[in-house]
Image (cartoon, rainbow, N blue to C red; front, top):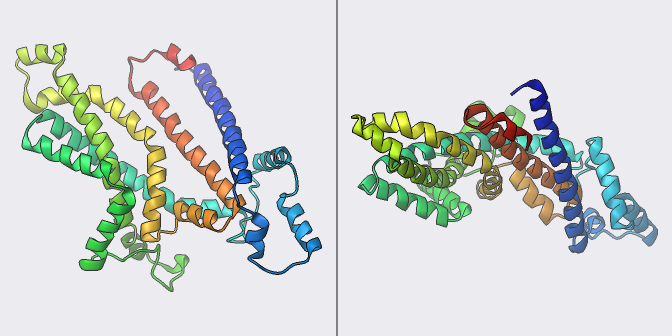
Length: 329
């Protein structure tokens, strides 16, 4: 891949990214405009004000202007990284998102890595030992995890490890009464274990089942049969002919799971009262904080887009069989 092809690839992705942001913003504005959310009432919180004061607030929040004008002004401000001011935190939305997203990114990054490694390993073991008790145990685990809501798994883990065994704190990012800046690393890390464990367990099942099915197909192919006739068997056969054919699709699937990872993080953060972007999104929705809610929507769109972009790049950087000409499609 030369420099021109690389620039063309990222230019094409940037255009798609810009279209995505515009479409997400337009649909978000339309949905919020049709909803009963009123930022003026959310700001006043049932406080008594005169009609003239209310009109001033409506002009400030833009509730008395056409929808098209709202969208145009918001997109113009977005180009300058100005997402408005949060009604809950009384701070710029971009600062709130950066602060809360940093905690969520740590949680999701660790969970994503653990679920990928553990899921791929379980899938390889199950695929190599097809129809054995190991394979059946992995399938039962995956079916149970995939059919159970993430918040239910989180509550179960919370009750077992925090309430009954008392091995970990019940929740929160730091101990009660301690500021985030004053918390030690161990105090912060101990409260990260259970949310990470929950999110990892949920993410293991899809990658494990996909890897298992792919490996079974590879091991039943003609070139593996030819390798067996040459005397290869066991883990050497899996290592030489199986892993190299299932690794790339598994990596791609893991990158494409960013949307599920973000959705799971929202529920898990609620269960464990973890101060991340998911809990902030719920608070913004419940308190009609429109600027913050829209900012989080844009952040989630960027997050999922980055996952898809990394999935595309993994194909062209890892798999030599893909022609560079496909990069220009």
